Image (cartoon, rainbow, N blue to C red; front, side, top):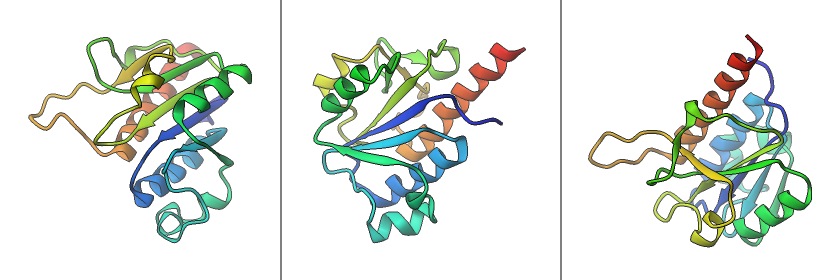
Length: 160
């Protein structure tokens, strides 16, 4: 598995420092360019985040924005080609069926609230994982891992 080309992860109002630390580990594992923490998402330095991140909070570049909408506008100004929300709704595409464009940003939202509605209006689309259970929800870190694996699968298919 090679590093993802130019991908930014945007974390929109995540409550748990443990989930944020887990996503730092995932970002490091796939070679993501950076993480943007938005709103009240815990950012380094943070003791609970550091415990879960296992040192990746010191190696993965990150920055903070007041909101995910501000992050989207900043990324557009920086030339990010596609910005997607990881959100399962009526218009979402299954993550492993999407044709990704790079540089890419993926926004992961609060587990109870999702991605902010005003941000959803500004993104290029939504990708998600089909939910078949009654709860129809998985941990944000697990969702990030699965969606980033889908991006890798897309890249591997494009190379063959």
